[in-house]
Amino acid sequence: MEKIAFKDRIDQLGDFLIETFHIVGLFVIGATIVWSAIGEYIIIMQHESGFASLKDILLLFIYLELGAMTGIYFKTHRLPVIFLIFIAITAITRFMVIDMKALMANDKFNLLIMVASILILTFAAGVLRFTEKKYDTKSECFK
Image (cartoon, rainbow, N blue to C red; front, side, top):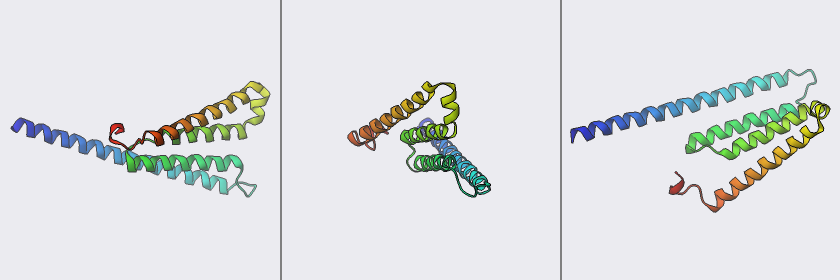
């Protein structure tokens, strides 16, 4: 009997340490995202042009999506993969906006690859949304 109680206490301690690491890690990641976003925003505000460009706005959207993903993971203990897809789509779009001339100069096929990548990621996001609604991922069998 005493052996089982000792094992239960060890399991509880392990669960507590894992949960503590999880919470501290999420706070560190969240703080890093906020710190980076604020730093980037300060750089944007110091532009000589006096306004933010499309690439700057898209970068801020990436930070917003990272923050939302971290917040959702903190509350639900589930990683919303669809947010990673949104981040990838935004990053590819930002890359296309910034480096369009370089993409077209090297090989016109590169642009087609970027567009196809966005299309595939969009399809994947749609499949995730569909399966999330159809199979109710909040049920016990997915925990």
